[in-house]
Image (tube, rainbow, N blue to C red; front, side, top):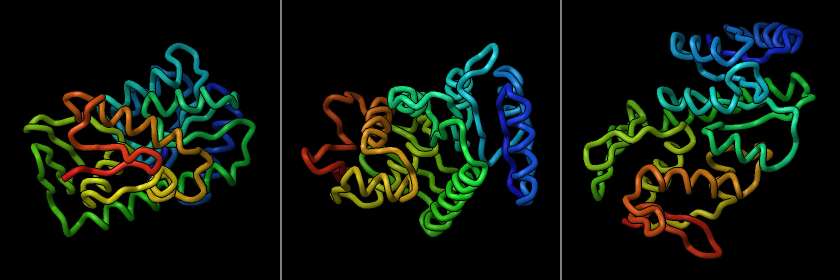
Length: 228
């Protein structure tokens, strides 16, 4: 049974989402503010977190950023704002997806199921390969952990999938559109900027000099690749 944490201060929204997800045999926990959300995220093991941006106390973005310090659980941001900057900001803080209010509950369920399918597929594809090591970078496929010169780097779920895909296919150039489709799925509503944001954040974490990368390179006008 998949576990979902729903965080929103509008109790009617939480009640509706909880009821609908439970109809699909999911276990649902709820929280109504940022502090309660963090407590539950630390205590429980969730497959997905639905997280509203506008919360009393700690904002959803602050919660997302803090969760990313100890977990790579997929996070879907719920926002009443439709501006691109708000969506990109959510991704900057480590979110995996976003849904703009007002939303259809069927869309919420579809997004959750898409993320769960991708995670299961990625886990299955990595079962045969236990570790990948190259140029001081090590990927432990069982634990989904990445190390640089023996020191663990804390990556989000999407950052891990991005580096795993590129490192597994050295010198193969992926366009932004290919990366978006492969990692986020064909139904994801974001655009190529989503990929750029994640590559920049990934470089900041794994590169000694992000402006002069050793691992993740740019093929100008085309996309990104791992230089072996």
